[in-house]
Amino acid sequence: MENNFITYKDALQIIAKNTANLGNEKKKIEDCVGAYLAENIIADRDFPPFNRATMDGIAIAYDAFSKGQNEFFIESIAPAGSPQATLKNKQHCIEIMTGAIMPFGADTVIRYEEVELIDDKAIIQVDHINQGQNVHLKGYDIAKETVIVDKKKRLSSIEINLAASVGKANILVKKMPRAVIFSTGDELVPINKTPKSYQIRRSNSYGIQASLKEWGISSDLKHLPDQKDEMLVTIAGLLPAYDLFIFSGGVSKGKFDYLPEVLTDLKIKKQFYKVQQRPGKPLWFGTTENGKTIFALPGNPVSSIVCVYMYVKFWLQKSLGLQEEILYVTLKKEVAFKPNLVYFLEATLESTNNGKLVAEPVKGNGSGDFANLAKTDGFLILPQHKSYFSKNEVYPFVCYRSKW
Image 1 (spheres, rainbow, N blue to C red):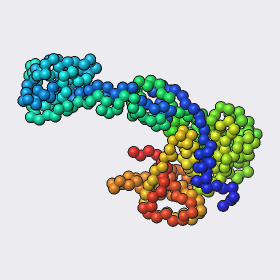
Image 2: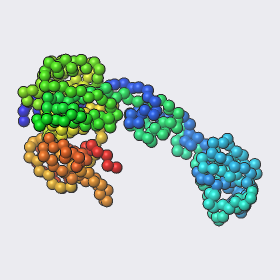
Image 3: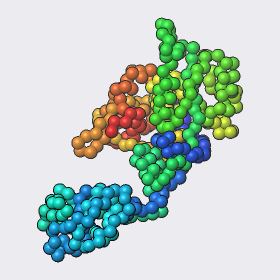
Image 4: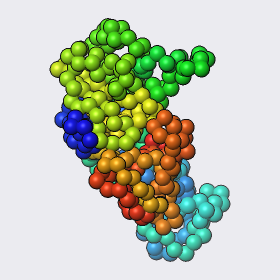
């Protein structure tokens, strides 16, 4: 292995030391799905805020029923959203709707299904009820001033619901990087063009853009020809406008792979170049003094996608102060891989009836066979310094597809 190739673990350590602090911003609650909290969501009142009925029926004082009474005069109706009613006579009842505040003097709700209503009376049709049944007590779920969602949590529909319940019309969230993705190479044409026999369409950049979007990052797409001077001018002009730069292609050993040289000329500090892995060895990572982050990925599509999920996502998680997401799975069949490299192996993922997640390798035809990715769900991370990986052994797995 060449001396300048570093290990997968060393690459992650270097990235972890070169994260970005992009700050926080307030966003409207309707724009926060997928964002990461920069503040705790705190209950501004008890949950529930009052003793509430959980069923439609009648509210009574249990003491009357316990003394043998099963017929109750209906004093009134308590709908949800109305002020608290009062049970004027403990031998009477109040009809009550789900979500309504319990009347003063009543402590138990009997469902309509267990009551016969005749004129202005309610006759209980069951022999046994429990005191306090069908009543959700004030503060039973969450007490006022309790943290109900911790900062750094990613906001799904559940957290949005909770934030709305405590009046958070605007939420403080982590800022995401301003990102730009470059395709490189004269062989690439726009996707709406018909390529000539020696050309291909620009596809990697759209796949990378989609991955970033899933993680909450909006990005712009640019293209660079295989011309060093033009690359220098274009990148230099865009450096002030973005926080995260991702390049696809132009980073290997070809005579027209100018990108590493261009990035050096632009005073971008190389943190590492080339990793002991397959696929994706020619990965370039660098930073600037004013906090810009640059990933130059190999152009082969499988290599490019691997590097996005193994390194760009890791950088984002560390920059946001998140714990790395690691999923462990069981290998479905034996794998042999003799090169002394970390092996990112495409695989499908299935959930078995005995509670295991099982990964089945689906070997493609090299790093250019990105059609094979459509048949799989993610990558196994098979460690370096090992040649045989046995059935039922457990390894980390990185998903690029959500199945459940």
